[in-house]
Length: 291
Image 1: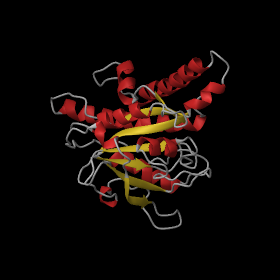
Image 2: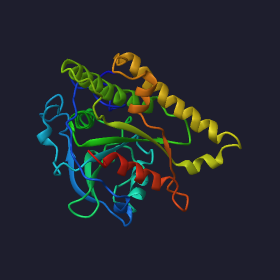
Image 3: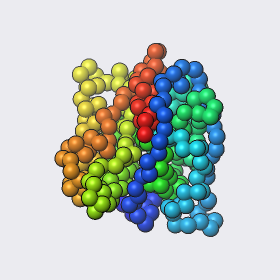
Image 4: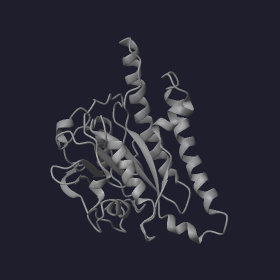
């Protein structure tokens, strides 16, 4: 991927060979979502292009806000993919995470505490990628994902009304490549130490939003569309396996693809009761519980 990213997807930094530190945490109960939750703790904005800033934020983890090691999940999606509405519903709120019909509205990493003070986990809303994106946003999100030891899972939203776009798959490929390179580096270090083991890695959780739009499809086309979109996602991850040469980490390529990218979840915030939201909540709790 070249430097056009995050005007289209993300901007590449010098290296993705990041080994995640082990972060301890306690078990988290789904009860944290029983009532409306979420409080904006901090917004972290990248300097504009014309201002002085490093080519990346890599290695400068002190720039990002710290929340006493609480586990984190980040939400990423193409502009107008429904990510804001989805995670407002997850948190039981109407407009905690601001949404807009104008692409590029979110320009910062917004950190939301979930659960009563001091919180149980942090949900991070990232700028939407696409044609209105800016390179400095890419460097910001890129470095956060690579360097953030507390990050447990990346939730990537896809509009269920159509198959993933070229930009969606480029972003997915980029994220997968970062994770796989980190995995390969960590595996090599463990082999050198004489104790080969797979490290805990940040996983990608695809989420199909706007499932209500599928009802407009002719009878019999809904399931094939979802299956085709799922196939597109896994084929993209498998190609990354071949490109990054991570076949020698002790598991099959098929198992590794499933380790990096979890089965997609289907959701809608239009249906009543809300469709798929309880499953998203359980998924977040599973990602952030334990060590």
